[in-house]
Amino acid sequence: MSMKIPFFNNKQSETTFHYPEGNIPAHIAIIMDGNGRWAGKRGMPRIAGHKEGVSTIVRIVKAAVKCKVKVLTLYAFSTENWKRPQPEIDFILRLPKDFLHIYLPDLLSNNVRIKVIGDMGNLPVNTRETLQYAMDRTSVNDGLQVNFALNYGSRHEIMHAMKGMLADINEGKLSLDKLDEQQFSDYLYTAGNPDPDLLIRTGGENRLSNFLLWQLAYTEFWFTNVLWPDFSEKDFLHALEEYQQRKRRYGGI
Image (tube, rainbow, N blue to C red):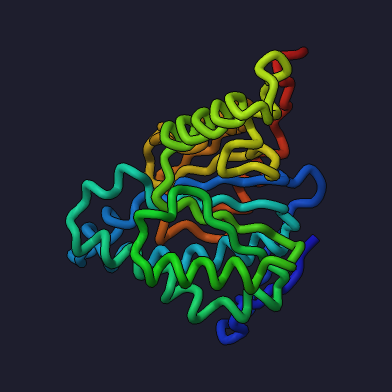
């Protein structure tokens, strides 16, 4: 089936795409890699790549809405990214405010819900306030949920979950004898979300980089050499079409 789909802001020309039908991943996770290399190839500062990457987020959120994906988790800033130069860190952490200032009305009108996974405590005050405002404003929406993984690291998440779980065991709120995988999952940042069906990583690297290690146990992986700023709606749909050709056996036959 083909349909014409305008960008959220309706200021860009419409483009016709073939959208796959049936067996759409409920939850797609994306490692958005390659912003710095995209800028470097053009003789531009790394921050130019991060800025261009925001345009890709808009494209892919739009596509996910049209495909009726339920959850889209975007790896935006890892716990390891604090090792980068301070000016680059400052720029990246200003991007959520810039993005939401422009696109929050469109996200609201498209029934998108914003969530953040990760430790928000170390984020700049302005970034935290902007994200909290967006989460509050979109909290009643029941369409696509977009999780921004900010100051996120999977090992940190698992340790945080274990500490919370052990505290509840010590306080008698949780029985160690009855503990199972589902109860442990309820202590993760992604509690309430299904595990990802599909992981997409751009930029040519074939590793997880401390992203959703627990949640990706049975996820289908799709890697591409395309750098994130160049990742198109067509690339996204190609990943979905490849996913549809795979058979997920979960250890069976």
